[in-house]
Length: 387
Image 1 (cartoon, one colour):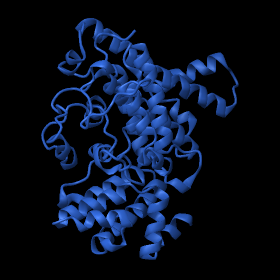
Image 2 (tube, one colour; image 1 turned 90 degrees about the horizontal axis):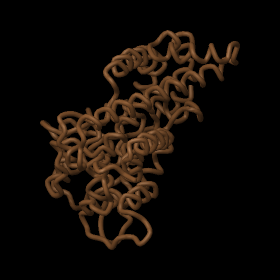
Image 3 (cartoon, helix red, strand yellow; image 1 turned 120 degrees about the horizontal axis):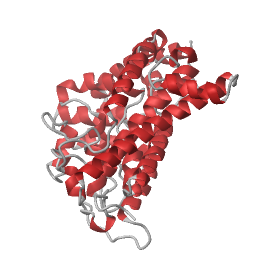
Image 4 (spheres, helix red, strand yellow; image 1 turned 90 degrees about the vertical axis):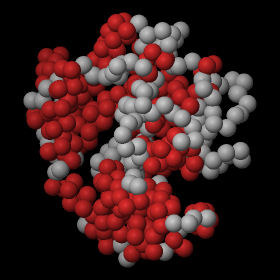
């Protein structure tokens, strides 16, 4: 039984292109399934978070991260009596717009695209699911429901001020009401993203030996988690000890979100999803105390992981890959694949060409970007990666 403020697929605002409804799947289930079968979703397997694709098989990729986010999101949505299918659809699609090489690749592509309107991965996700996935006979994109598109567009809350061009271009034709909060389901997907990366970045940093278990045990929240493990399992194996502590850390974050949301919902007594959208702040969030503790943890990760010397060296190498591929394709659009060259034939400006090149590069996996750089530009960075 879903709550009155949950998104109801029977009352969904529909799709931009009208379709017959499925006889056995709700509209939100169809959204989820289309996302899973999308080419952009499959490519997440070889797009990385922090570490580059070839650095190890055990580090998170965008695909494993998205699956973890979806698992957390369904758990929270179930506890709050929300629609789990919509929550899962937004969670699985939230990273579709990411470039190769994680945020490093996005920073490099953003710099390249600065004269042409910039690049934003959330807006690119909208561009992918509304235009760039071209498999269906009746429409470009995946023709997702308004609710799923809203969740992707407002992944970080209401979108005001300078709206990324890719999002604005779509919103001008299909109003996603960018100035309001998203549904509770979309807010759950967004907070699940925070829960997942706060957990797995610690795990990946330990695996990469960028910091020690003892250092983690001194951080807020984690100190209590390690203390509980040591009390329950004195003398536990090193690897099991850290896994048990991180598992408890994961649980603390999820429980905090659920408890605060339940309290907020009890106070506000929303009667519909519209009440969620018009609230004065996000319903789904961390408590102030946990949020403050997470800032300390993120600061630790920034210093010890994201700016670790080995990571900084790799960032420089992959930044060069993007910075050299972009001008190459701008000067040689004939080197784009055949289906992309057809789009080039229809353009009338350098900005339109840049946006096609940006679409192409942002869709690359880490591996393919390195291979293309090696093939087209004698690829010294690829050789350096292996050294």
